[in-house]
Image (cartoon, rainbow, N blue to C red; front, top):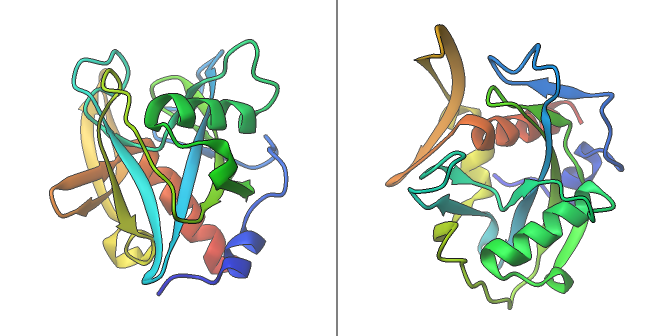
Length: 196
């Protein structure tokens, strides 16, 4: 069952903060991680909340073919993680920022690939249109929030990577294999809802 909007908002940080952090397996000890931000877009559908996700194209240098939130590296002109997340969302999926109500933030997420990501949680109310950038985004789809937050759907997997065994979360949904940092940030939200 999806949380109420107020439960969701109460579980979030009101401002971006490095005081609370989630460190992915292999993400500790990276001296100068690359700052990034993503939008965690929650869509308010009549049948319940969903999460809007993208599948990255197969030729990209970072995280090719993976399921992800819209977002990316912080640019010099970005004044905040929110600015990065909104800019990247417009560039990647054509979702205009006036359709997004920022609800709060999740703890910074340190990836094993050298990024420190600020997840910006936003509520999206239909109607809206999306237009994927064909260079970066192969597909845009939605998954029920209740499915993603259900601990029964949070699997733990392992992979041998760069000389070490790494563990990560995965949430398979139909033909989509949601894993890695995206699944880790979803797990972070589910954990905060339990204690809020």
